[in-house]
Amino acid sequence: MADPDFAGIAVILLAAGRGTRFGGAKLDADLEGQPVAFHAAAMLAGLPFARHFAVVRGDTPALAPLGWATLPLDPPQAPQSRSLAIGVAAARAAGARAVLIALADMPLVPAAHVAALVSAFDGDRIASRAGTQPMPPALFGAMHFDALAALSGDRGAGALLADAPHLPLPPGAELDVDRPEDLARAQSLLWSGLL
Image 1 (cartoon, rainbow, N blue to C red):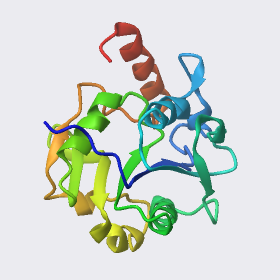
Image 2: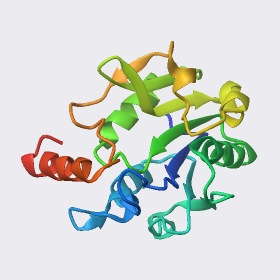
Image 3: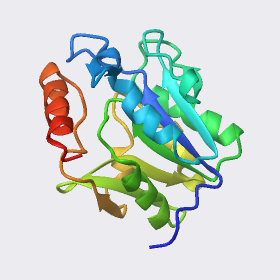
């Protein structure tokens, strides 16, 4: 596999979820002594992407100290498609050739997986996979920026990934923290040393 070429790739961390199923403030919930959002944010901040953009709400834990340019979700109750549009607009303005879309409520994705995605990226699209399901983190070339910006509702970019190549996530890394029991499972996986 080729060495990853991060040049010209902006990462967009979606960190503006309302946490309704969690009971609110899920990104600030404690996981191993840090907010859930810090795990993905710190891992991605350690990779040499051209730009690091995080789309946030007022109650998102502060990510700027980790090296993120934060973009407020406007309006604050807007769906995930609006977060994508805001992030893509910032990446386009920065001259990015591609964007990596990542979720702040997926705290267990390893840096090695993201590097493998970048290594395998051919300029079009590539997704992560759990079972048969394509999912974030996912990379999109600039040719897809208009389609990403035009998405609507509270769905992500999954429809654009149906026929994309994909790399399997390590077992457990696909976990996203939507409910309190997901947080407990994330804690268990970290304690087990499997991730």
